[in-house]
Image 1 (cartoon, one colour):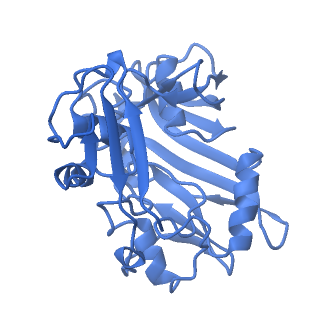
Image 2 (image 1 turned 30 degrees about the horizontal axis):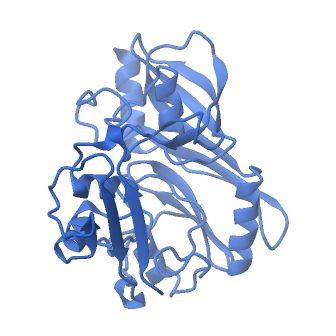
Length: 308
């Protein structure tokens, strides 16, 4: 693999951000610690000069960052317990727990789902997405739980990637959100893109965003503050459900990025669970659907909030 270079011009609304903060937002798959390591190693130039991670940016500053080539040995197989819902020669369906990253990224090469899958599958995973993301055709956030399909063959990867592109895969999520809905169901059809005000966040962006569609329905009115809902994705943008629900006044409980700050009552991350995933099997041509039960923390919250 070759080294990668990225170039950025700082906009007026980005003025005042730290250099490492800005780059961590732009290159969200890389850890801030890794970004800082690159800056200190001279692989980041600010206006053609070396800089410190904490330097404050000004409008019209120019940044170049060089990401060194990745080595295959950096991603190792790690035996771990995996909650396997289904497995055959082409695909494996995993019920991903909370606080697990799906695939390695620069600066984070261990403890991810891919590390565990490399051990379980004896390195037999699709190679289409390269060294860091073998078998990964879609992903869910670190703090989102639920069903995820991983491809063991290139045949499966190509088929599922095409189904994702055509929006033919069934993806149903459950979430706990703030505030009661006036209607029992609805659709949010609003484009999503990188937020110009905070590059670490996504936002509804009508100018530069890509079309995103989320269908939702209320499952339970828990109390006067929260609702338990189901969301079905028609598209699959980064943070789609979190951004769409926040945009209509119903942010997810526990989501400190798009919802109230420090209002989660001890929760770590948003209350979002990928419950159902359905697709056409790439080899048999048969439709298959899988379901991951709600995790314990989610069920306990439903009972607690429902009794308040």
